[in-house]
Amino acid sequence: MTRTSMSLQFFNRKSILKIVFFFLFLQFQSLFAEKITDRDFGFSLDIPEGFEIADYTQDGMSYFFSHPNIPVTLVMKLTEEPEAKSAAEVLNKNLNKLSAKGETDSFKWNGTNCGISSFTMTLDDNYFGWSVAAPVKIKNYYVVLLCYAPESQKGCEQFIISTVNSLCIDSEYLNTPGIITSYAFPSEGRKAISLSIGGKQIKTSLDKVDEEASKFVIDLEYAVLNLYANHKMWKEAWQRYYRMIYRDNAGRLQQPAADIYKNLYLELKKSAGQDAEIKYAQSLLTWVQNFSYERAKSKNESDFTSLPGAISGKGSDCDSRSMLVSAILNYMGIDSAILISREYSHAMAVTDIPAPGQTFTMENGREYLMGETTAHVTWGMIAQEHADRTKWIVVSFDE
Image (cartoon, rainbow, N blue to C red; front, side, top):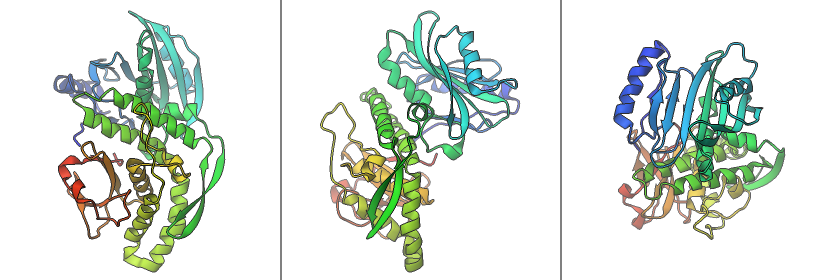
């Protein structure tokens, strides 16, 4: 998986950014698609594939992205607002400069006050879009995103929402529901569920809105993925599709992951010692192997079952199960990912646990143990017809 990160330098920002982005503009103007990371201001964007840098301001604080295949524009702006009382006020100020119309709302996202608006405006054409504003880690600074398309292109709205929803303002909350999803699906309170894993009944809970919200994200990202079916960056689009689902779905499993760890792993640690990790991982693998099998009935919808839905008893397929195992292992600090294959129409989990069996060599050079989630086998056992490593694509969730 080859990706390019942009590290925007705060020191001497005006001159350095001009050089960095001019270079990127020349090198990637026909193939810009990668994660934008600003280590100084502490935010990132995992935008859809193919965006190009169309322009930027001389002070290095505003960037304009266009897409060669989809009529969507993204504006990313950093602004210092020491007098502002809220992010919503900052957003409103920026929308007013464009004479944009639309109500601006204020809400909390991961404990941070943010602003959000759906808007319309007239420039050279009539446009509609979504915009957000959120404080970044440098005091009095905000990141503002505006993403829009011509009014005649209403079919672009899911692409717009996916783009803005990829914002992360604090790496601590990377794998939590996105800004627009969190606004659209506020918490509705907890509901109790019971899980049977490794011979134990584990009581835990989900938010009442988790299943509906996670399904919304899956449908949203599937619509975006379908735009890349015949695109040269189909592989990168597929990886992003799973990253976006993981970010939202895994974020909703924090309580179940904690309860599974507390009830299962801590006891294994006492009884199995140094084998606790692989025994824990095997309990999870066996658990999902026993899930009821289900795939989408229509090609117009994703096969992916939401992780809250899967642990609540909904039928699932290999990719949902692989991501679920990876999410629970990642929760306790065991680096895990998934493998997907277009040729095999299959997915597997992989984990950084040293144990005998079939492994996959990751980009970091480490051998990760492969886990089959649809057959009743142990970690490291895979079907011979799935053995060609060149036909697997890695989707990592730790970036």
